[in-house]
Length: 515
Ligand code: HEM
Image (cartoon, rainbow, N blue to C red; front, side):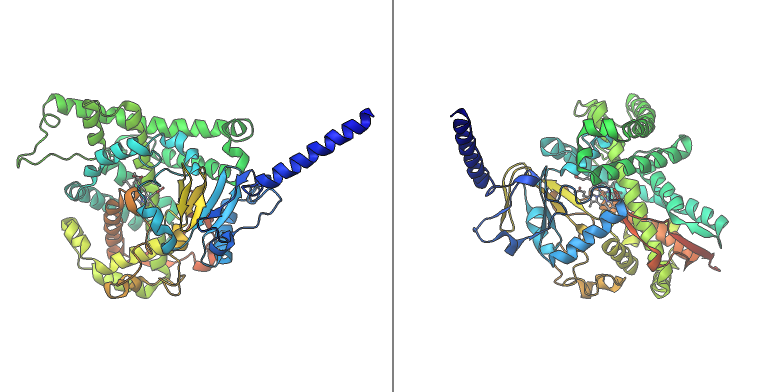
C-alpha cells in the first residue's frame, strides 16, 4: 500500500513537472538556460532570424569552447554565410546573442537613444579600463563624453599635427636605416602610434619616460588572456577565472600597464599644477580672443579635477582608455593600409602621385583634407580590414528590434566587418578598390553601410584624430619609399583580438625613392 501511494505521488509529481517544463519551454530554451526569442507580430522567429544550431544539446553554450582567435574569426564568417543576410541568434546561458550583419538591421541600434550599454564582453576589459569612456554607460558616460568632446575640437587637432609630422619623420628615419630589409610592420608601427597618442592627448613624450615597449608587450598579453576568456563561457565567472585561468599573469600585466599610465599622470599633474600656480592656464579660462579656452585631453581632465568634476581614479580610467583605444586601432589601420598598397602597386602609384609634391612640414588640416585619393585608400582599408571588427550592446530591459523581442539580458553583436562586406552596398566585397569611395560612387549609399568608427551617440570620439595621424604617416612613408610585398594576401589568416589581427606578422619591403 505504501509503495502504491509512493508510486502514485511520484507519477503525479512527474506529470506536474512535465506539464510545468512544457509550459516553461514555450518561454525558455531550457537546456541552454536561456529565454527564447519572440517576434513582435507573433510570426515564426525563423522567418526573421537565423537560429544557429548548437553543437551540443545545451544551445550554443559550448560552440566555441577551446577555439582560438583564428577559429572564432572564421566561425563568425561562416555564420554570416549561413544566415544569408538575416540577423542570426545564439543561445547562451547569459542570454540570447542577436548578431547584426547588415546596414539595414543596424540602423535601429545606432539611432536608438536607449541601447547604449555595452555588452558583457566589455566586462572583461573592465579590470583594465575601469569606467572609462569606452565601457561606461548612462549619466557617467554622458558627462565624460561631454567633458572630453572639446579635447578633439578642430583647433586642438590642428595643434596635434606637429606631433604627427614629427613622429612621421622619426619613423621615416628609422625605415631609411632598415630599407631593403623585410620590415615587420607589426613591430615597427605601434611604437609610433603609441608615441603619437601619448604626445598629443596626454602631452608626454615617451622618450622621456621608460617602459613604453614593456607597456605594448603587456597590453598584448592582457589581450590574449581576455580573448581566451571569451572562448570559454565558464571563464566569464571571475571565481572560475581565478581558479583555472591565468589570473595571476593577467593582474601582474595589468599592474605594469596601470603603473605606466599612473607615472604619466603623476608627471603631468605636477606640470599642470605648476602652470596653474603660475596662473598660465586654469584661471585663464578664456583666451585672448575671449573664446573659451580648450585643452588637450589630459589637461581637460586635470582642469575638471581642479573643479571637483572628476577624481584620480576617473582620470586613470580615461587615460588607460585613450592610450589603449588610440594606439592599437590606428596602428592596425596603418599596417593593413601599407600591406594593401604593397600588394596593389597601381593603387600605390596613384597615391604617390597625389602626395609626392606635398610639403609635409608645412601641411595643415586643410591640406590633409585635400588628399582625396589617400582618404579613399584609408577608407577602403577600414572597410576591408576594420581595426574594430565587431562591437556589442546589452539590453537592460525587454527590447523590440527589427521585429523581434530581445528579453532583458540579451546582447546585440554588431559585426562591423560583415556590415561593410555587404555585397549589395559594396559589390565584389573582398576586392580592394578605393574607387568605391569616390564621391560619384558613394552617392545614395546606405548611411550605415560604412561604419568603421561605429555610429550614433557612441561613435568613436577619436575618428578625426585617427584619420589625420594615419594620413600624415602615409604621406611621409609614400614620399620616401616604394613598398614591395613580402607577405601576400593568400598568406594572411585573420584573428579576432580586441582589434583585428593576423596570425603571422605582416612584412613588406621598402625601397627608398630617388628624390
Ligand atoms: C583607425 C582608428 C580607430 C578606429 C577604427 C576606431 C573605432 C572605434 C569604434 C568602432 C568605436 C565604438 C566602440 C564600441 O561601441 O564599443 C570606438 C570608440 C572609441 N574610440 Fe575609437 N577608433 C579609432 C581610433 C581612436 C583614437 C585615435 C582614439 C583616441 C585618441 C579613440 C578613442 C575612442 C574612444 C574613447 C571610444 C569610446 C567612445 C564612447 O563610447 O563614447 N579611437 N572607436
